[in-house]
Image 1 (cartoon, rainbow, N blue to C red):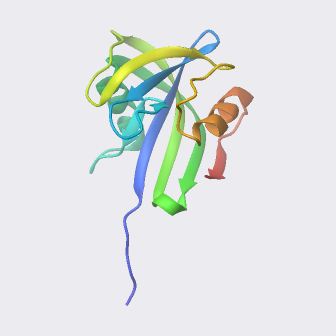
Image 2 (image 1 turned 30 degrees about the horizontal axis):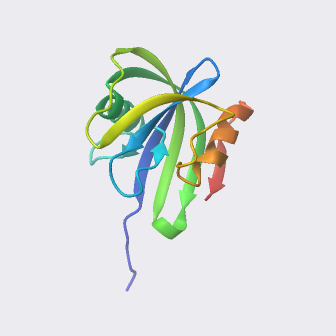
Length: 136
């Protein structure tokens, strides 16, 4: 008999303002700083997930740009996609499970970030003409 399991699919968004990126501070667990984003819901596309999660966490309306990378995390049965997002409107404020939001210089990210985020930031900064595919 074949054993089936579910893989969690998530979308995260880089929102740039000059030489900074927007990060959100999670109000649960280790309260890491992370990119805005989250888990795909049933019946949703990955782009809808990214747009919804940014709105729910930051109050910002965005338009998605290019895909930066696809990151598999086999140890967590997770797949994450990171995009570039451009602000269309809204008012920046922490919402829902987010307790703070802020722009941070790319060269000086907070110490308390999710460990895999540094590699994703490097991929974002590389500004490659294609999306990377990595296992984290």
